[in-house]
Length: 196
Image (tube, rainbow, N blue to C red; front, side):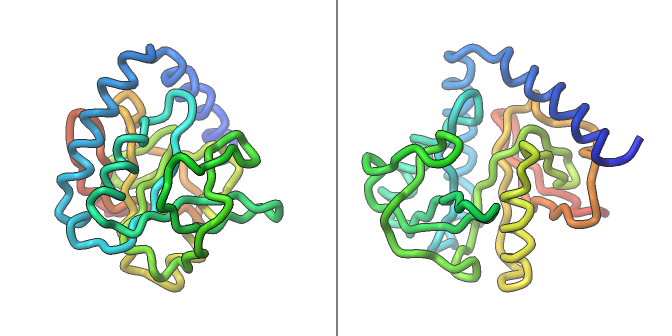
């Protein structure tokens, strides 16, 4: 089985795992993940932080985003463009986000932030492994963005946010898939082995 077929099969499984979570469980576990994420020493050192506005049964990021703004971080969120790419824009008011292409809340205004200015990036995914492998939704937006960012800012810290039920033994990977540096779940912070 090739990596593409393995990814399709894994996506079906991990969509199912997420769908099984109740709203209360998502909220409770997301609060634990938020607390662990906010305590990261790498975050304390970061001036500009990229994150995402959650939808569905993803790790809920509302409290994380609000805390980052309260802490004085320069917060930037993704905006999906029509050409298959995304860019990040500065956010100062979470109440002004509006649904974008996939219904994900996005900043329509705000200064564009080039990839090299983002010190730390919180990243969603369907599944992750302890080496930093990430399985996305299959559209490739983060893959393209991370590849572009890595060329301009190789030391950018990539942090996956996930529930422990989203951890798999080994995420099927293609050559272009970039690895996370850290994973934060409700149970632990994982320092990824980055392909080792």
